[in-house]
Image (tube, rainbow over all chains, first blue to last red):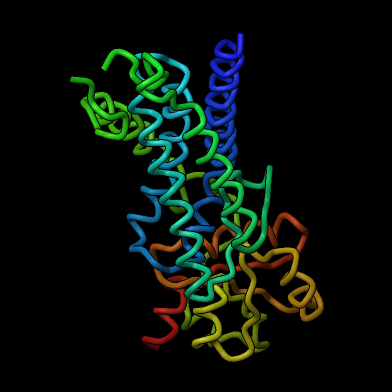
Length: 148
Length: 139
């Protein structure tokens, strides 16, 4: 019984992360110019990379969201999701250290969190959910083992 | 032997490659001048210098870049701090005063976005500085 509840909670955690990625991707794609402007406001990257990044990231988020829900691609999608969340968090922290006042643009204008603290907390929660969805190997077949 | 879940496999590559054609299509759509033919007009530095009344300069670059150096009298207005910075811009704007928005260089899009939003609010005329801050420095 307890095992079934834990398995259900793991699935719920995974669906929540997938949902967050899907919403983030759709929000950015609904106004790509606004997301591009957020990246450009940093003036960290060459123009071509800003444009490519602003276009690539939302699609990658959507692919990851779909990948998390499909058992074959789940392990790969969860690795990429983890990489993205860690990357975004590092990005926010570096911006904060450099004194850049940033609205992260993570969810477009649908969920705006000013500053560094709350976007970082949000990312850490998602990282926690992603870790939570991983079933320990000793307990049997992992949720993330998939078909790989 | 079962591989640890954090070790990448071929599926990782597949997932990373899938968005590339979609991204390229999106880039084609958001490239400058591709999606809004009726937006603010582009103006050169020389043209602005010929105006009788000095425009209201709006710097769409980051706050850090703005604080380092900007066009004299320019006000900072970015997507990220729009609601905070907009009141200052509005307080300086008069209907007879042209607004010129600029960002870092030819390739940046922030000036288009900011100029588009200002136009959408009924502020006119709004222009985009061709070549941005880089062109201003060269002249």
